[in-house]
Length: 436
Image (tube, rainbow, N blue to C red; front, side, top):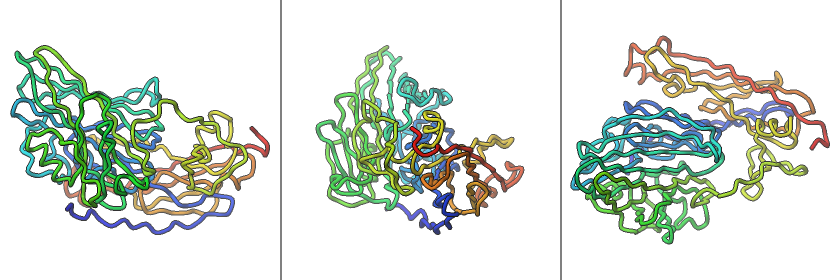
């Protein structure tokens, strides 16, 4: 079993005035620092708000509103997740020993050698997805991996394409794995589920994802994959034994689990081959690849919902305020969630303050009303838009951050100061009755 990472403690935030903000702030969780491994972070409005790729092919994901990251260790980036490659008898893997923390043990492997990693590109659309390209070498084998990770805003899956190029003088044969140690938020244990027809296994809140609940799944695009779900240490041991995944799922056992997919590979000398898959995260248990056609973004005109009560059957009831304003010029109906964008601030040592700091308290205020507070790390606010009068409104957030004591001890000369403050503002307009 993993060691307990800490209890989640959230005191309810006080309400603001009746026409104002419901002062329950949801968590906007930036991947935690503390790892020596550099990574690039795809940041978006979500629902996958952070997709972090190590320069050695480790990975970590944050889901909108979740209090912890999606893969163990749930406060470390990169986590126990990534790409593994067997060439001949040599096993290559991310540099887990240099992560902030890891539960991977007994895996005798050589870290990939980082070659290059791009900045995040793209606009987060289907035509131009966010993209990070990472290149590593598998030792001196002549095999190079180019991994391309892409994400389209609004989807619960991100795509990974692993291109294996062989510049050696003979065929490169072996196994490619993509796997991770699941973390299902409320508990570090869960059941399994599998879509055997598509060789897609994952971790689930409920056995066989019945009834549908929170899931994490590896869904292959490239044919010929094998799947596996079992205890996390069993998954790592299978890779460590240099065996392809066995197409099994211990689906009915509640345990501290992991899952993944693998391919047997053979790349001729001077050739290349690409293996692709989706990694899916869904609190509602929606498995498989993302939909081929995006849902309509036009909200209904006669239905309102209380804050935070998005309906899976009618997702458009939950209004994204900035998007609604771009499309219609104002917030037309109902309640909405606003995410404050927070730019990363560098110190002279190159540390991203927002990644290594912790929020000590955050205040929200709407139209100058009384403050609501939250002592977590949120930048999301639920606004009771159905109660607002027509006109212009201002939502403010006052964020107080502090560099944790352990970071100060670890890097005693890197921080010019240890406390920071962010003051954020969002101005929006509500429509008169009957607009739209």
